[in-house]
Length: 562
Figure (cartoon, rainbow, N blue to C red):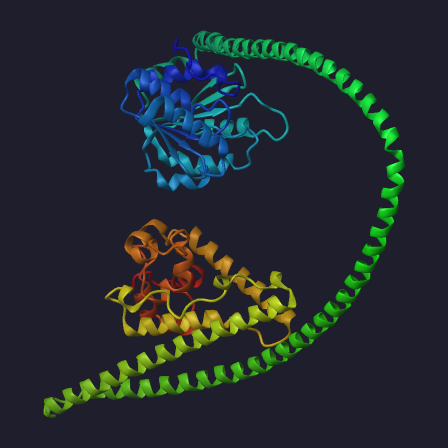
């Protein structure tokens, strides 16, 4: 605790750096975690203590990529302490699930004393503290409006043993583990004695003031250095100004000589004015010519608007034809389903014939029916692929019409609403995926694409696009927040998705649009194919299986792995 800190910067931790060094020496922790990144972060003190004591420990800074200060602190610690310093690029609220429970010996909360998320962060991380671990909460002396650190610390004091230090902004230590280090246990046993607690506080307060005085001295030295530099700069600027004045005086003498020459050139200006008037007349003639060209362009624009009207009328006719095509596709699909049900019934009857019937004839008929069913499923998938391709062509026409109208703001990116007929080639799907899952994937993808088009005015179409976008974003948020979806597991399980630039950064979007219908599982705990097979009422709705399970299946008592 008598070490000189490598990094001194005014902060809520500055007065408590000697106490942090003592805790490192007393506990010999194996993992120190700092949540958040602010000026004067305790992360550097943990790294210095680990290196000074030669501990086999990990010092982890938890801060997301949006926090530039977190990147700066980690870069400085990495340069100075090497492999001791590590960083987890995630927000403190969402990073807890990436740390094993009971693995953190020292947890430092480096967030603002007025942070509204402080209670939520503590709730998520307390289960990660080891049986000998402690939690450090700074700023418990601050009582100004909006500061909540002292309230959360006081609430946790009723659950855990604690130590409080009141110098600086204050520091609260919660002894969360049931088997703390021997020196910590000794300090706790004597803390209730007023003399012992006061003595310990005074020792660390004096040491903390030394750090604060050192920071103040360094700041004053830096200011003195800046003042000296500014004085040198001012002296150089003065010399430059004096040289500039001499130069300006010489230029003034030259300018006076030049004015004398201008007097002699005065007669020539009259001739130049006459030439300028001639140029003005020429420019006026050019302006009249430009007005004529502008009128011609207006006529061309009017012609373009008439072409747009014609294209709009063609688009409306195309929408009507497309609606008829969709109805025909629906009728044809119902007919296919009816024929398939009949074939399935006949196949079931053949399989249940008594033993006295000729086996060769029965098996031959069964193979014929199975081949017919397979061919029918392939035909259905092919027709849905054709429908998705037609949908994509219609979207391109919509984009072309919108571009002619000059309305790029009304056209969403194509990928936001339209998808290919299936997300992957047949070879990339798992061997366990049945032909039925391929049909479901094609049906769901085609339905997703058709949902983009509303047969009505352009305003109705824009409202439909916004509604679908909100609906998709809500569903995606539910999947990402669910414990049933594991993004890392999904990418490891399906390398074709991990190598896809569109979905490798957002695997939940791929599972929402395709994976659930292709027989892909969101985690080891949920079986997409088995869920749809076990619950045909869910398959008929064409909703993503995991989304149905989260919204309704759990309440209805359905099994995630039937």
